[in-house]
Length: 164
Image (cartoon, rainbow, N blue to C red; front, top):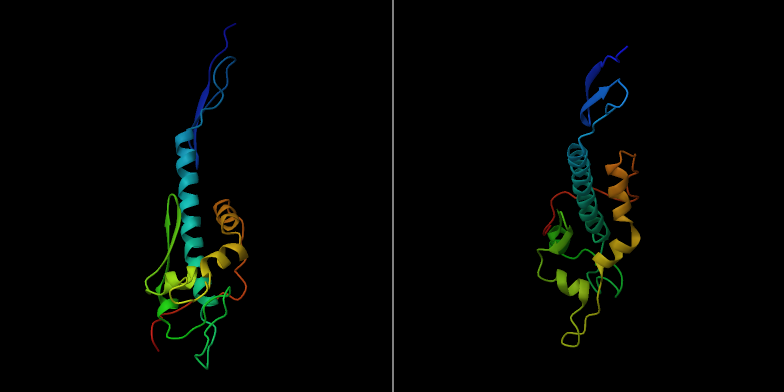
């Protein structure tokens, strides 16, 4: 007696899946390209969220009050608030190769790396400190996998900026 083939086509979030119920026939077909596309979209979305968090994190750490406006920060710590130009000028952009962290304020580079012998200012490495304090890659991976990721402690959303 011959085996009759009865196949069933289903659709899921992974794409089309053909299921066959006869001996020797393929049991499932998964569209791997679609799976990769979904994964990439989740990763992109998570990375964009974390880029915004990183930008807000650096801005919040650089918004510490500086009432005397003298010696705004010590070498090796985050820059303190003076005019707000630096804090408002920090930008974090996500690309498929990683994050680009920049500062619109002209002194952003001097704060990160120092001025060297010419002016004698030692670095206030805000990017290096932010990278050392939080595992940003782990946050992206957790968000992309659908885990609940806690808010960063002490992170206040920065509104506006610039001179006050």
